[in-house]
Image (spheres, rainbow, N blue to C red):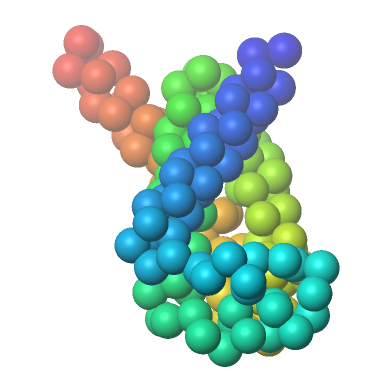
Length: 142
């Protein structure tokens, strides 16, 4: 039960972080309202064509930061089986990469691939930091 809670909490923390980075990025470089309708293919194509590189990088950065924080929190809550928990968190957060690919940015393939890699890599790194700090703590108490 603790592992399931750790995975859910890690995925929620990761998603909230991704959304917060997205809000900050959109405040810096707002998307024009007429290009916000994902149901209109013309609007999506114009949004993709007009988006600066910082939009793409902030999307990948947001997921990487969210995955790291999610993996960190998940590993702290789980207190064991770090690889299993962080992999599950990375898997859940990778749904955002597929969403990005199929709905938002199908024309820019490197963004969802970067998101997919960062979801797994950074969720593992977050858990690795927890594991390393626990090992240092247990070594110093001996």
